[in-house]
Image 1 (cartoon, rainbow, N blue to C red):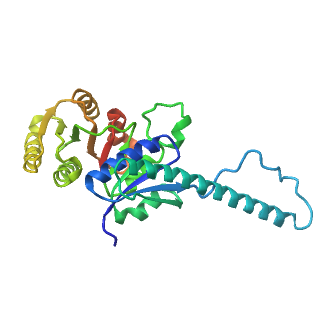
Image 2: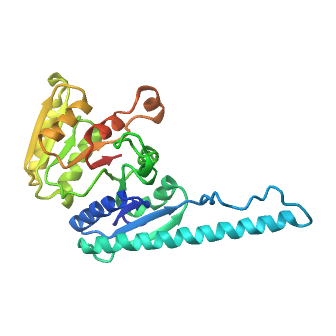
Image 3: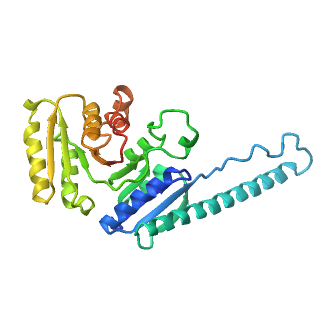
Length: 291
């Protein structure tokens, strides 16, 4: 098994890729880890609308001729997609080098995004991807809608995943959405042990009732982070988590949120809704998701 030794940035050919690249460069330099950009190519590139109409093809060997022509067309489209992807990745590579990354790697793969990332997981310390992507370029919907692949990808992985929303801003204030559960405690321990957030103040925010032991959990989080050298601010506030987090992000000028993700099954989320999706939509800032 390969060691977890790289930052893997997943990019598509949209303007969101620049934002992903900038945050990936920030993470890789802060953690002093190698950076790789991964571009997934569709196995079945869409053919042009202006293709010749083959519906009337007749005659001996016509079917074989047609199949060969379509195969050649597929090969040409695939070659064109690879070349476009190569130019696109080289541009991101140069962007990362300009941001201070030494020798970032680039790679293209055919396949489905979630399955491809699962195959890479053993060698990855952190995944970075846009919360929206190429399909959102022409979308008329809410600009904070989640990309169609995001939830599926996050559920399929077990490494931390940084999801990016917009233009890069070097984080200065970090918040963890903390509920005292195993996943949020893991987040506190991750921050305490990781060089990524060294020197940055950490805000640990909990919503709920005082009588449920949350105060003690907050005291544990504060002690753990302060022992590791972090300036730590805690708060226990009444209200629904998504509302509390959104308000605190704005009031405290938070630049990055850390939280557990999809701790319930997809079936439960389908029936009752997903708190993770609600928090992601409410926060509207880069969010580090823990699984």
